[in-house]
Length: 281
Image (cartoon, rainbow, N blue to C red; front, side, top):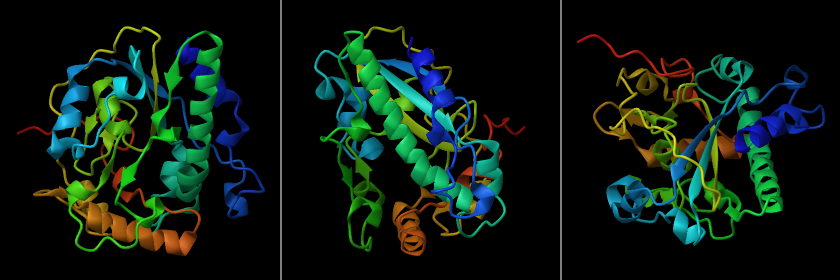
């Protein structure tokens, strides 16, 4: 049922294409934002959710498990929205600043995702189910990060200062959609370039199989994202420095307001469109 609702929404939503009124230039009019989504399911009582709540190294100790969002929760539905080929190829032209295609995918794409969340809540509620979408819930909170979250400057912050009380990527990991990459994006079978959303509901659904155990299992640590990052925020030794990334994004926000973005770690990398093959040792 949920798969049908999601697919129907994406296929019929005009927001999945850039309108002439929104377009930054003529070249992006009619541009498709997202391809066919991936959907995964997690048991709302999965022990990993409690681990995320208490382990400060993973989520900063701020994560709210599903049953704190919805007391009678049974299932967490995680949805990955992969960017279209045009979005990814557009952002590959210039590896310093975000392309117009990427800026639209990040800004108009987020509006579409929020509409999808509201649509699913409405449809599930009509069918008698309780549900919550944390990313549009009043209780959702993000901490520190870029100016897009309302903070002023990032000097002196450490990686543990960044986060939120609901992590779409960690939820997707639990729901079997993929594992993390060096850039802290999630590598799915449709790649790393895209966006996530999720719904917590009392509807019961069999959890998706996780064909991995390690949190970085799909990442080959090839280092291409390190070379791609214009902010120098990724290293093989330390992974991603959130402050350097946030500072760069703040600059992009000042330049392209109200749009912003980067995404260079998600394009022209082996995991752009799928799970990369492990290198032979």
